[in-house]
Length: 284
Length: 273
Ligand SMILES: Nc1ncnc2c1ncn2[C@@H]1O[C@H](COP(=O)(O)OP(=O)(O)O)[C@@H](O)[C@H]1O
Ligand SMILES: [Mg+2]
Image 1 (cartoon, rainbow over the protein chains, first blue to last red):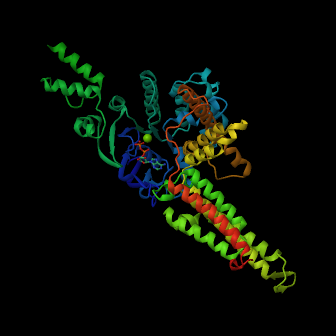
Image 2: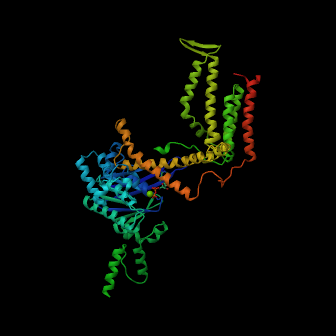
């Protein structure tokens, strides 16, 4: 059974006003535990609205959001516990830091869950481990950190709650390639140790190709299509019509196929492509 | 949600009143307020009301919008009405029961007061807030007050501050919504617990909000300096305000209204109250 599921969800901002804007139209989505689901789409296609549905920050106008088969909006009082089980890292989360030290800030979530102080300390250490924050940084003020470090602190603040579903809205936007890889690597390790379901919104197709198990493409408030990275990136024309790129590796593979090199369709990362070509060349 | 709070009530449109010079509208509102406070006759009040009805028709603002602006002052309206009704002493006693005495004068004063407040609120809405964007309004105020620059009042700086503050109100509201959502996602709750707990729950919102606001102010200052902003001295404008014949006509109608009201106060046809 799917860990978390959207069933025919619709949402409109400012209904009944001249500014009404349909943000989601009949969107369905199902995410398995232990899998990474990527969401891509043009700016304004409804990605951020969709992730706000997943932890009940927004309730759908129609349709249902099911966590382990239970409608999360059926009981408004249970929403607080839903938000501890579905961790949401919002876009540009570094602006939500507030406490004196990084350690206390990361502990904010677990404290709200009412855990014991030993428990909290252990979770903070563990979350800092996943995001690569050193002991020295933990005692600093979050306002003295660099942008990339703040981002890690914000992500650690959610990881410390040990959510069963981890949702991230553009977690690596605006970071350098090294910082991006480290953050995404940390998320991968979190998934491997806890078996959590992970949903990542991203504009970076290379990241999607390497990390996602399946990808959903949103177009103008609707699901355009979905599938494994290879299936999605094979529909290059449709993606480009939607203002989205395909990874460089896929473009190179297309060019190679045009010239008669039989690169398999499922190759969409640079690493896989390099390995394939190296093997091909060594056979000759 | 915070979004539902209407702050700037500007109602975009293309009516003659929208197009009028904002200075005209400030002057017109002032005339209207003065007229309302001079009124001492029934006919004068009727004239004020009719003027407003005409301008409302010209503004093409839905009546519902105008009336919804009255809602917040309904309590004050009722309160003034009752106070005037029971506390005005006069000559013609109409009703008396225990310590309550109602005079004819009381009813008249109470009605006049209520109508006056009603016209004042809807009037300033139609003449100014609904039909003039806040930025235009600060522009107009700056120009109208510019003679004060001669006596070293920093008019330009004040209006720049006002413009910036108005410009960033929606941004701050949006930011607050976003930060609240982010902290809710971390299990924070803003609507449970006692007073102290609720006040404490605001800390995770207020600190990031202030940090962002200061950072934004800093960025803005740098950006303005990069574009050589040095205050009002010798500054010219891209869009200059110009009075059109319609503007003069409108201001004239404001002055005429005051004159008519004062005249009616002293004429027997005005039905003095
Ligand atoms: N708070 C809001 N009020 C009104 N409209 C909004 C709000 N948030 C988003 N929208 C609109 O809804 C649409 C989808 O937005 P969003 O989900 O943020 O898209 P994305 O994250 O894919 O860029 C956009 O057209 C946006 O303008
Ligand atoms: Mg977004």
